[in-house]
Image 1 (tube, rainbow, N blue to C red):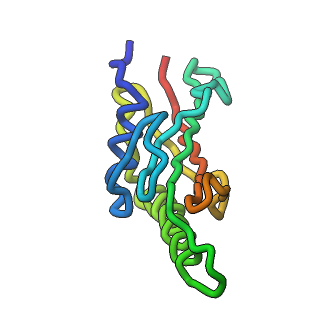
Image 2 (cartoon, rainbow, N blue to C red; image 1 turned 90 degrees about the horizontal axis):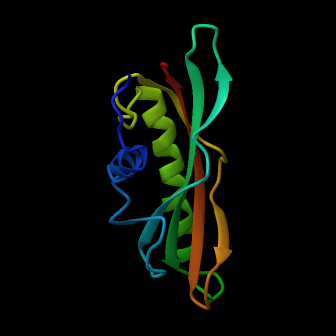
Length: 144
């Protein structure tokens, strides 16, 4: 039997290593400038079962950022904020390349971490606050 590790905690610890995140909440958090939240999606589902009994699973989560945005035309603030979130997407790709993954414990081997989009999603939260979101999938093998 494999040692059980809290995957939510492991992913949260891993995301916190990104240098662009200062305030990271889990699932819920303040809706204010500079706050990020890690939001796990109902996942951790079996994607594939192998003949030896091992399974490939997907753990999917989102990271959201709240940032003040410029309402005046011709200001670069919105471009800079968007680029800052885009840097997180690039960081995830680099972590995958160097195989720097969260620790899911014994019997669970992470195969790949990838963003499910190549640009952040955006929405207007309030009159002066924008929400940026990136979805990520961790693909891992779990031994039975």
